[in-house]
Image 1 (cartoon, rainbow, N blue to C red):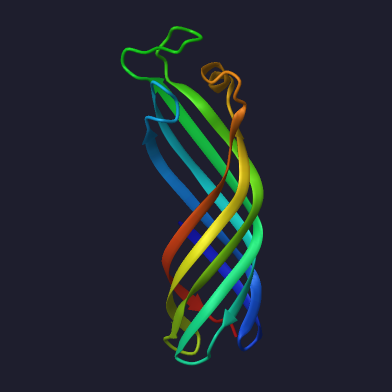
Image 2: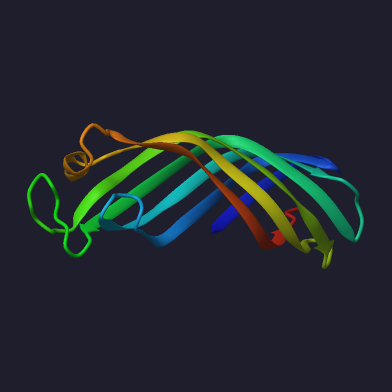
Length: 173
């Protein structure tokens, strides 16, 4: 995961800004996505959010809560091959097929909390625990996917991520 945030302080304890999160989902093998086939699933999500940050107390150590709303764009790719001894019913072949290769955009929100520690007047270091959710998205099947899974047009569902991260903050003056 990679992200960035710009917050403009409107008050010593509150600011508004923009942020983004980029999540790469590593390839993951599945033997249950399609009966009698081995699949590899991967994807990526980009969320762009309007954020509000509440700094609970000022001082050397600053606990904070951040929340925001915006849009998330997610892609999903699934590639499948019949298991040994099986073939694709529609063609009688064992070729590898891309079942899903699609993207969708949906409402996203985040809630985060953490601690920042002042290193000097302009630089802070901290830790943050976060939750990001992108609402239901629909991933359409490819033509090959519709052959393998007749009667199904796509997969639908939300995406949620929990994060724990270190952070460096620079205060522009």
